[in-house]
Length: 376
Image (cartoon, helix red, strand yellow):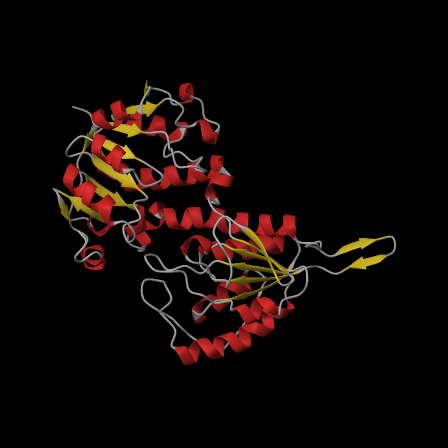
């Protein structure tokens, strides 16, 4: 019997993405899989139900969860959604594995085999499956658009009849996928761009995009492509050098985040106080605690002379392309294991093993299990 793939409508406020797009619906069908799409699932991404060629539409999520063998989602499922899933179902999507013990317990109790995109190993073979990177690129792009719209200055140099307007100065903190996209976007808009990251190996990437790298003399190269925690002495040295760059910029965009941990506080109250009057700060990491002192998720605040924005749902602001990118990540993850219409997961595969959260009523991911010790 062919695997039945379920695509529910996302219900979290502000979420407009969907885990399947029409082009990939055809590809799943070509693999022999059946598709079950909840009515209105693609509405936020401007996709009509009829666009999912070959899919069966259902009017409510409970029916979908009760029938689907494989469920593709964007946002983590609610406890009610998990309870509606049939035992042995496979779930793939954002699951916030580090944050929510109750969700993990519910997945275990329901016997759901769950795979978290946050846990996909960051290895070469899995790059095409890396949803954190694809959605981070969208977020970095959006941060610059928000900043450009709020900045009281032109980003590019502008010549007019009475003279020349100097370009805005943009400083990007964090040179991961989101930060590099922010740098590239700000450069395309004509700004003078500087960037900083505690990982020295990013200097070449920053400069390749035409930005100047701010060297504080502090290195925090860590494992898995992420930065390690700085010592207090290193933080003080970093703050001193970075403060000068912050004081000189018109726009500050911060993108530094560590999965499973609070976002590192990089921009102190003193740095914010020293910013130019009219400066704009966009803290992409606000939802995870923030890189900027005083930033709050979902709020725009005036602190001293600076306007500080803590945007939410950045990827959902351009749902057509972000859904396409995310859906391709999921397809690249799961499609190699759909053979003649049947789902045959190779649980010894490095990517499958590394991203599995729960299976057979157990929490199987060792690092997550350690993080939730005593809670699950």
